[in-house]
Length: 387
Ligand SMILES: [Fe+2]
Picture 1 (tube, rainbow, N blue to C red):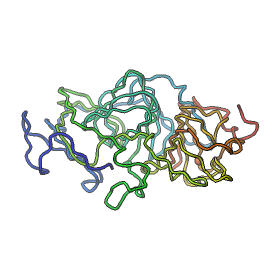
Picture 2 (picture 1 turned 30 degrees about the vertical axis):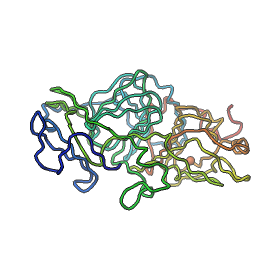
Picture 3 (picture 1 turned 60 degrees about the vertical axis):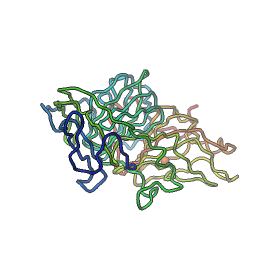
Picture 4 (picture 1 turned 90 degrees about the horizontal axis):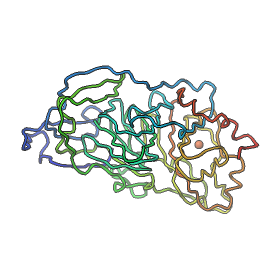
């Protein structure tokens, strides 16, 4: 999805003999859509196919069930305690055939992991860490979207403080919205971010090791392979498939004289869903503008909002706080908190930061998500509102 990148020791031509001081290197083409989509070409010191064992793994991840009462939900994710590492500590919240939305409050670094079922996007709400992968190191921190392409062998190294992350596990590939791109794939002038805002690995990361386990999520479940040699043995790579980070703080908001609809906030497109970024911005500047969103029926999508920081102008009084996540399903008309339009009449800006995920298939809910649900939320639009 991002631009072409070249890191480390790469020969002048593809598919030719390439030697390192330790011997002949093994090429790996990591490609999407067969051999027709975006790809990267990696040079390993050892065969990436050399595994010693494979075993099936049972994970404790919960499965979502249909939202049969069609409830709008407010999940207080901050009430989840610390749990494990950024991979095995994830708690599934919502999901459908295209996407699982999970939450993790990780205190320790993960083992090696790759998700062969699709791309992942981790939004870092709190904490700092490093995504180490076959492509190199990527330092990440609060406000970063971290996009990890499918089948990237990686591990999360958690920094001094725990990391809280909202993780989107797709069943396909994340893309930059097509309308932001020129016919040749460059981000257009006027797009809300540019190539300069996307951070990728800068140098190879090589680690020695033998008999190295790798946890794998794949299309039919979970497994663990033991690799003969450490997968982090790539001395160079080039291509357009690699992990990258993008800070929500680098998203340039688009504002108008009157209300701009959520598509102006779109950041990524996924298979069956979109991701939008709401960032601090000037409010609509016509004197008569209603400075909070109108009620809307998203007839074709379920809407998820993760509240990161700020004043949450349109839902103030609904009990929303940082690390809140709301679900407004299709079939339910949602809108601003009663009184919020009047309260925002004299305001010139909003300081909110939030991530929105709209899915085109209905989202199911896990028991764990319901366990942190705010029972008062369903009635939060009905007067009187809670303070
Ligand atoms: Fe909405």
